[in-house]
Image 1 (cartoon, rainbow, N blue to C red):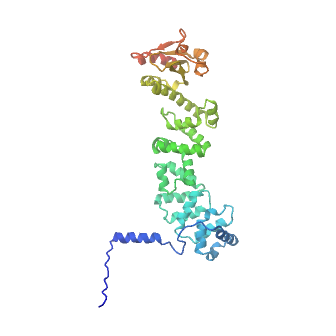
Image 2 (cartoon, rainbow, N blue to C red; image 1 turned 30 degrees about the vertical axis):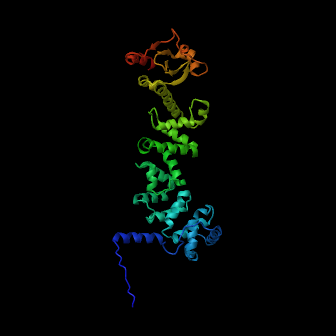
Image 3 (cartoon, one colour; image 1 turned 90 degrees about the vertical axis):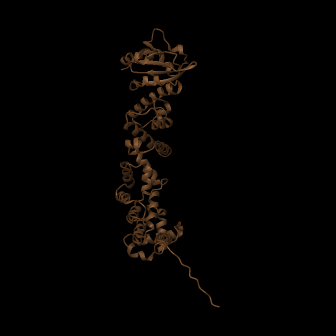
Length: 397
């Protein structure tokens, strides 16, 4: 009785062959190499560096054959362990270029993201990007090459980011940059310091901007002040709930108060003035919207917003009062609409009422109602807006 061999039949579809080829290619390194990237042993790397110092940059290409593939791998993976002041560093870079392997491209790109100021890494990154194996689009690769050839690669990239219409996080992904890397953080810093309006108005989400401002506050406080200064100088009009200015208020306080004055140092007087204008109006909105729930009075006083110089909310017995100061008059409104608003001359306000505005003295509603001293009262009934607008406008403007 003999054996009968049965030969199985396999049928490969073209797509299966392609998948198999890609799988095998990913598992087989190019040339003679280490199968895994590892941290070089300090003693091994030290010996290689001593040899590089002895050979020197001028002779390294001719002498490159004395280094094994393992030696060159160790230099590539351990490149960041070489001090910038070490004369072996440029020699190591030249050896890597001469004995280059495709897989080094991704390694040196990661190195650059960690140590972007290392000038010896630039030609290595150029080599990796030129091979087109790092995953960037051809256009992104071209910009990276131009950046590496510039005096300031990170500044070049940050300017490029500012000139694009895509959001920062999309650009980080496009250039295959780890968003937690030192390079990404430095790009973020310079991106905001470029100071262009589109960043805030059309390109980035409020959530991204607020999280970036948090990053600035924790990492770069002086730059945080520059960002706020730039923002205030870029625009003349701000929303009542402007989240950038709310962030500044939460972290820097008021520039007209003792602690805030210190934190606002270095920010221009023009910017402080704009911020205070916004803050005074925000106080008005907060009073009438959150406390009084009165949109009619918000819209009435909005017509005089640009003339407002100061606004203070104070407790007044069982209610609250807001003191609105304009160039020539001051107005006292109460939270409860049953109270009329009192309009005083600015001189009288400074002489008799300003002390209460500062919070130095307690207030009850009758304290702020000086019979015979007010110019007129605003009673909030009927068409009161139309009745008092012209009269107030002549006094305020």
